[in-house]
Amino acid sequence: MKTDYDVLIIGAGPAGCAAGIVLAEHGHRVLILEREKFPRYHIGESLIPFTYQPMERLGLIPKMRASCNQKKYSVQFVQPNGRASQPFYFFNRYDKDTVAQTWQVLRSEFDEMVLHHARSKGVEVIEEITVKELLREGGRVVGVRAQKKSGETVEFRAPITLDCTGKESFTAVRNGWRMKDPYLNKVAVWTYYKGSKREPGIDEGQTTVAFVPDKGWFWHIPQHNDMVSVGVVAEGKYLTRGGVKDPKAIFHREVEENLWIKDHLSVGASTGDYYVTSEYSYHSRHCGCEGLLLVGDAFAFLDPVFSSGLMLAFKSGVMAGDEIHKAILEKDFSPERFAGYAHYMRAGVENMRKLVYAFYDPKFSFKQVIDKHPDAAGEITDCLSGDVNKDFTGLWDKIREFVPLPDELPVGAPLAAPRAPQPV
Image (cartoon, rainbow, N blue to C red; front, side, top):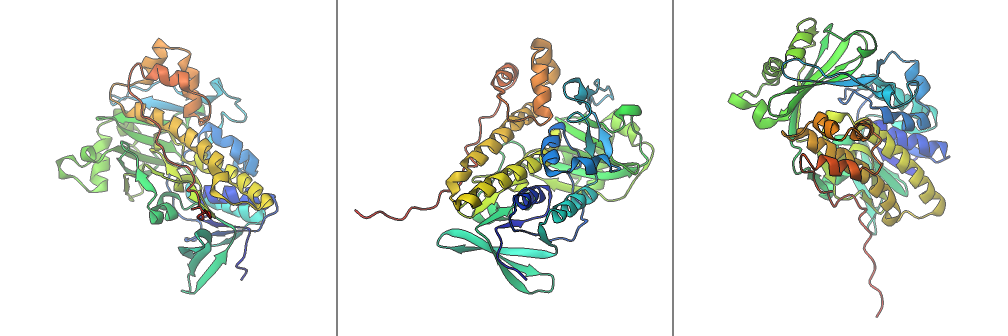
């Protein structure tokens, strides 16, 4: 078994595979270490329009067009009384044949497809191997120690290691870098239905955000094979009111709080599995240190209301791959050289984060802002669609007329290597 590589990647999800594909195409020796055996279950099933560009760069668009994944052209919002907004069609602002047509996916199948694509590009992948610790020499990360399924321990070395471990955020947790978002401490409970109602025609694959009291909301994501992913997100104290803690009981009680959801789930049947996760919005204080870089959800994860996770995973993976390629050519892996990557990705996260904060404010509605400032509609659409690295200063000024917005978190910069004392 080879143990020396140009780049080590922990985690074979979309972020890890994206970085691996870019680096392999640049001609580098890349190893991805994955704890699980694919296909494996994962939540986060809705793509937004600006996932298109990194997927195009990775060569995934032809595979998606040939797949059975449910096409998605729009998003709609539904009040508790069942009154639905007009769908927000992406093709009213973007090209219908490219950016404006995206997909709803089954992550077990989707992630396996991306992993196979990475292997076809020359990325080496070992599944069912668990990274136990980072190897350090002289203050820099030089590789990892991992345990194979057989129990054997092996070490792998490379000039740089990418943490693409998703929500687990392996290195941020161990380094004490991970911090919760000050406000976004929600709980999600979800399940899957087969044979429930869908919208006709072009609206069949739209994402529906259906409100319940206290700024809670349901997602309703139609998938292929007549399956629907459906879940509720709200404050824990709301969902567990009355002492109810069983995920199934919580879910079905909240179904009664939105007439649209109740109607759409009145036919079909639940698969019987109910999932729950809590306090999932977090940020890493640093994007990495010497020999280490965080990518995708391992760097930051926002509330899922606007489905930004896969877009940010692919975008950060592609950008990290290009930046590491330059570092390899220049033989410079100093933390400072990744400051631009960190600043760019944090800027996008902060823009989406402002919209998420506004969404959860009881006094806020997109309609109010657009009624007063019709020109804001396009910018709101751009941010919600994932075009998050534009200058939205004017939009934030307009929204602040209605609700406060959070200050940017002073996090994400690389942790600079300690300097040796200079002779006096």
